[in-house]
Length: 351
Image 1 (cartoon, helix red, strand yellow):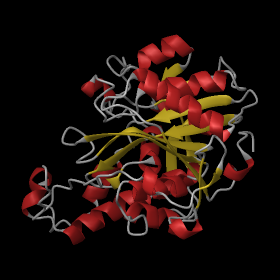
Image 2 (tube, rainbow, N blue to C red; image 1 turned 45 degrees about the horizontal axis):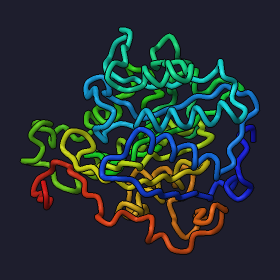
Image 3 (tube, rainbow, N blue to C red; image 1 turned 90 degrees about the vertical axis):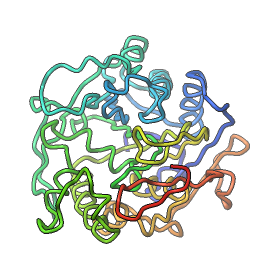
């Protein structure tokens, strides 16, 4: 494996949890410090490979504020880059790949207000969007929906290390939007809209008005919609292997995951080499059952990893030394996250 990690963390079923005290509004220095500390404890090292980061900056240009809690914080990515530059990364081959506008066109993305322009200037990392001319076709083995995906070549090129860095937050369709869903941003800008694709697959007699689904969509119908998304996410992960998944939960967010939500200052990071195992632990830490999560179930059934917490080896470093974690209580959010799905009869306290 080209990415070197602590021997205990090289196992696909190993997940590292880390938590650091932060204030109600963590500073950019907090994000930077926590990112570097996590990689140092994990003993992450490279050997000159191209390094690609995939943060969640979907619609970041629209929000134009890195402190909303909606996107992966740029200072966290900055900290990761600075660490790797000192530990084997090829300084001229570091990329940040995402579509910060989430629009169906090849117009240049300006990245203004996202905080990533400043990170690029400080670290020398290059900003890229998965435009069609940067994409290559990959055949999906045993596809559930898509026999072929058109994905950015930056993520699948030879001698490349892909570091997937999602935000810890809920999502109105996927329940959680973590590593698996974050991969959508590596798909062709014209083809990445899996939520709407899954919507269009619903029985026509169900669909009346998407904007007013609160008037007609029940839990079982929402689950069918989730399933359509989950199958697409599984297909995508089959053709884009990640080498390291690091969930940024310095600040987590619930609600819809977008404008309607609440932020939680947690100082939390969940990391590991397997995307399903990492997502499963993070899902549990904020109050959901990974065994019941449709996206995680489909991913596990597709052979992408396990969502069974009993099979996952969880580690922490309370004394600066990696060791088994037998009690996740200190890492769980004191207040369980809630998700706003916008379906019929849904009543959520506090919203």
